[in-house]
Length: 352
Image (tube, rainbow, N blue to C red; front, side, top):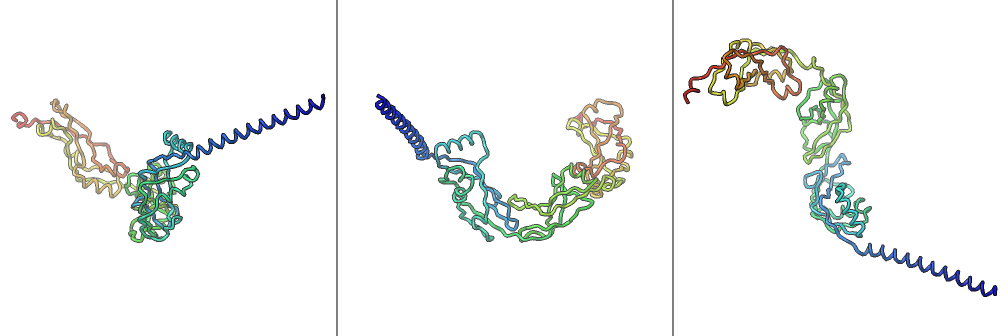
């Protein structure tokens, strides 16, 4: 009886092992089939907005694509497993950063200065880390070819000039060093400077202590090349940069609306005080620009003034040149004068 029981138990255990093994094989084959099906059912996806940007890491070469630092492709058609394509669709829907590729001219064999009119765009995209890591391939792209231009640069010393964020020239008290060595195209003008830009905050800080900034040049396709040398800029203090000047010849102008113009005559009773010597503090350049203005002082006439029968007193507007006023290079060095005037209606206004 014991032998029979033992035999049956042994066969039962073996049968259980076989069933478990069969289930494992079935599960494995099912997973394998799904993986194979996913790999076999490749999909394609056209993507717009992919960008190729020039790698600017080589200082002695200037590389541009069609005359620009970057170019946006019309279309890139990607191909791959459905799951990978779905991931790209999700990224596009979530507005994730678009595909961006970098062109290293040296890696692409474009080491000599020349124009390469048939650069293979698809070849660049297919071997890019972004595509290789995605598990996708590039089926096609438009345009298929681009023109790449490689220009050799030479190293030469350039003078450094300061500008504000609006592009207006600044005159520093000191600039060290005043020249920097940079790689530039062979036709670069001798006096074309390396630029440094000071923000309004940096300009104020530079009046008390030098600030450090990096000069740069701007190539024609928008590429910016920065110097390896940092310069120290010290701006003059308010007292040092501005001088007191008297403006002895001034012209008065009027600001008035069409309701007043041609109908009333302005009679100023204290013209000597209005156009007499005007004391200003300014840079020499700002003072000269102010003297060349058509009107140095302005008097604003309001429509309501036509109803008054009394003498009106109003402060003058000093017509300082906008550029120098904005930079703080010109200001009034006295209390504003006031004009005393009346309006006299012209006979022609009553006889149209």
